[in-house]
Image 1: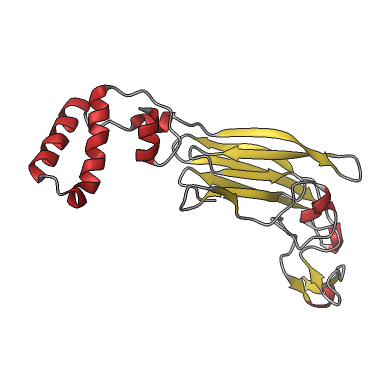
Image 2: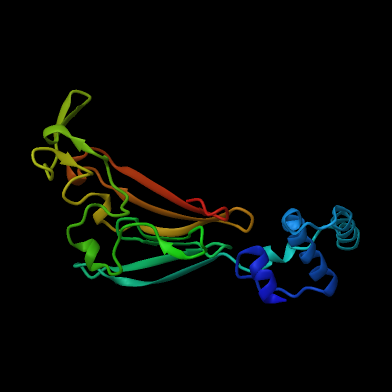
Length: 231
């Protein structure tokens, strides 16, 4: 029974069904393949009527109970200053996995099922923290205060000129020498909806003068993994 439903639904379900439900599961296959099997349409219609009347068309309700969303927090390493970096692993009801760390609010991996049912990571990143502590092309990172380049590392605000690091000589890039991608964030669960998905919020305060930028800035970024496999 279990093996039959895995083939029918295309996902790893572990459920118990009655003989009647098995018949209705068989109907679902017959309905979809009936034309190629040259079955009598009257037989198909009769099976459909029996299934609807006797089961209330609730055959596959168990699929929503077969898997649960989860959040697992584990250690990912330590920064040069000795700060512990945590790995947040979110799994939705389909087995799609989002992995993030609170250093740089970085997406480490997004493991997604392809058309053949094989789960693969579809992002660039590293398995260990050392890869992110060294120089890398901002893989999966949350950048700021400013994304992209500021010409010659200078801008004016309210008549005052500010000078920033020219870390992409001669320009300023993605927040400077120590932008948002190279600092610690606070991670927390913010959305846990069984019908929609799971949200993870990263927040921090960028103090006045950080990397040459004026004013205190409260920053929040939310990543949401939906049960429709959207991110």
